[in-house]
Length: 169
Image (tube, rainbow, N blue to C red; front, side, top):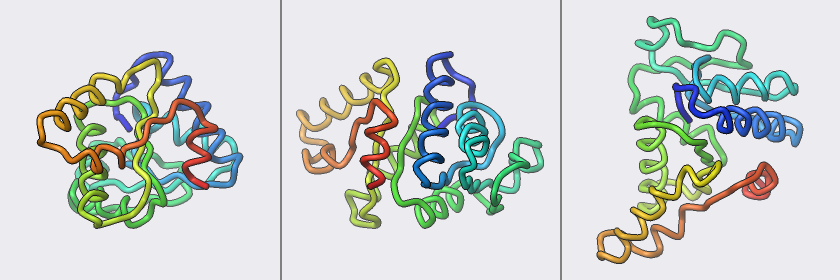
């Protein structure tokens, strides 16, 4: 999820999702910043009494973007280490709308799933059709023979906190 604030409806969705996940007794593992949608999600989960673990590269701490109110903040050396650590800690991956960094994380989680490096659910939280262009692109890649239909099928689309909670089990 992103370091940019995004659209108002995305911020509202992040609040509702963070609260719902925390109230259901699930923790959140995320990028560790206090900014953008990821900060909104973390704040909502924390306000609802949830456990929130952040994983942040050291260079972002130096830019003062780390969230200081988390249950735990783990510092790592690089962005790659951040993503690998988040894969280790998380039980599932759910991406809210976001930018290039979010897209990178979704594609990497999906790729690692396809390569059997993890067997955890990967999903996009589709607020007001935000992810539809990406889903269309993946569909075109399947049609063109560049992506296996089985790989595309590993990406789930969720549109409500209830669907996220179902994904988490």
